Length: 620
Ligand SMILES: Nc1nc2c(ncn2[C@@H]2O[C@H](COP(=O)(O)OP(=O)(O)OP(=O)(O)O)[C@@H](O)[C@H]2O)c(=O)[nH]1
Image (cartoon, rainbow, N blue to C red; front, side):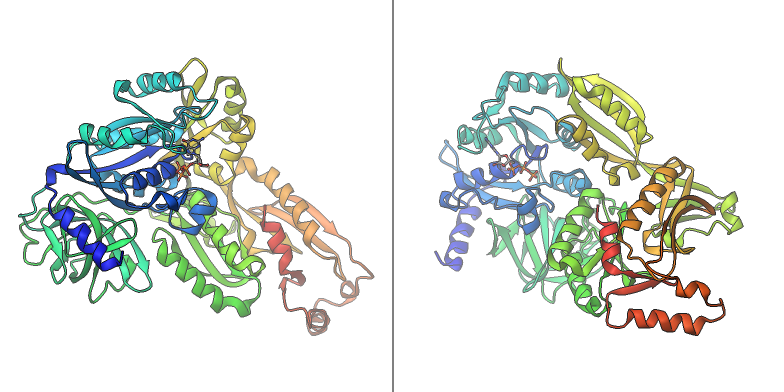
């Protein structure tokens, strides 16, 4: 059917549905429990997509999401469902990111709903993100419909999962729906349960506009597109709207619904979730403040804005450099493009003596960072060098002034006397780990080694444990989750939330090559890690640096203290050793000669290092 006809037909059906037959809901689940698969089944069931489209995971739009099988950006979809009472219901399924780094997006998605499916894998049972997301949903006052998925699996144990839901969440499971999102079994019972158990949204289409900005993205043709939830009023082309967050005014260019892709509509009404873009368009994606409220121009003094959301703060940083500086422009374009589509990434120019001009990127957490890194590597392969992820440090100077350092290069020198009287802080998280009881000992050891402080240990079934720890955020970028999984045959699950700053003994660890610091490698670390990491660095770096005509000394230094050292012997007589220190032109000439024809080389002090050495050193 041509898109215009489809739009008109859907428009007519929606216009006939009163607000009390709207339902806005999302799916609360642990990663991999089948949220995307189930969403696709529901879309098929309501004829929003045809069953022939197969296992497409329609709502996971970004390629990287498909590849990694994780949802990064929240998407939403409108469905029209003919219920057994013979009436049409307008359903908005708001997809939520499954991972903890995207908590702000999860909260926003929840606030546009009045209920949720609490989806649990029948063989895995309740896990860390089920617990964390349950509490978020509960705090938002969502009505929950328990759904047990993957009942087709041989290892499915439905009674055990129902018991967990009752014990952990005190839920009445008599209304629980048992399904297989894969085979479609039981899926038909979900929407009737949504209709009976989740209340219709409140709102009044006759009142002035009160519209919440839930998400935004950049579209090459439409510019900045906003995903909005209308609480009151209506929205149509030509309407003039006012943003409470920025004070800007806009004229609506187009409104529509995600069905599952953008389908233009004449009007959006209170209770609906849909998209809007302006004409002229919003200039910068930064003007789309998630959690912002919009109203009709002229009503800004009458309408009360909805409670906003906190801007998420970047917690993990990396620097990225082109291997060859000639690629700078190309990489700059590509990074700018990626950032445009993920507004939670922060971007700044950076410069490293060892690696040249590059960028410093900030992310919400370690998964967010690794997803982005993967995308850059996929697109640019060997032409990009990415430094190890690191968390920020807070310095409180003796004057009481605070400074957040996200780049180790900005960390004061050990010679800077002010640092001695300053207090240092590192970010901490409250972590929830679920695991089978037999691995508890090993997991406690891992958390303690990561400087964790145990908060609680609870059994939520005879064999499953919930372990709560306060941990340095740095342990997460050091792959704490990988270690926990490794120790539990993959059974451990982890969730965490920001727990603020804690005072810590931190020091800047430098890698020195012939006494000269390689700035791109420096890290701020806890004193307890200095020896281990220092040794690891020098050993690993030695492997990747070519022999030179003179002796190369590789050292790791914590402040002014050398903690590890390796020497690379010259491959022949050290011609430079004989040169007098003042014979600098001669020295340079020799080095220049060696450099000629080898473009990808850089010098750290007097040592020439192939860029690939950095790449190998920095890749795990
Ligand atoms: N056997 C079986 N497998 C299922 C079922 N539902 C989903 N799966 C599989 O479980 C895996 C995870 O499913 P997804 O739908 O991607 O999980 P998700 O919860 O959306 O994951 P995120 O988007 O990362 O949060 C996929 O390999 C699915 O094919 C089911 O009912 N039965």
